[in-house]
Length: 172
Image (cartoon, rainbow, N blue to C red; front, side):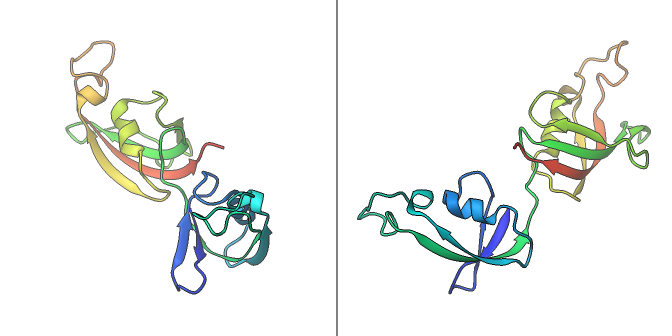
């Protein structure tokens, strides 16, 4: 997410870069800017609201000039299709630490929504932001199944994870 100052209102204008929430020329102008940078950009009608004049949009058919100041850059929230990197600690119901990546330099990366992790872990990480830590207990049915299994010692158990979001890499 990028934040810009709306001229004359004193209110920031916030949007997600690269997903079509603003006109193409504005999106392109903001890409690569650094926090605090101001630039004036002229956007051709074809990259703004189109070249055909329209009664419903008075800016259609016009070339536009914007003065843009980048105030803030927010990392996106984790969502399906994004690759994320987390640290986690897995605790069993009795509080025993079963597995952890914390302090090991072996961070865990996966792509959300692709079935690369148990469903409950995918759900828990979705919507997190970089730097956020959460504790979640995942019911056995959302982990390795509700029925105990000799081949998987975690099957039949509710699992508690402490998850810290380290990085989010949106789809390019």
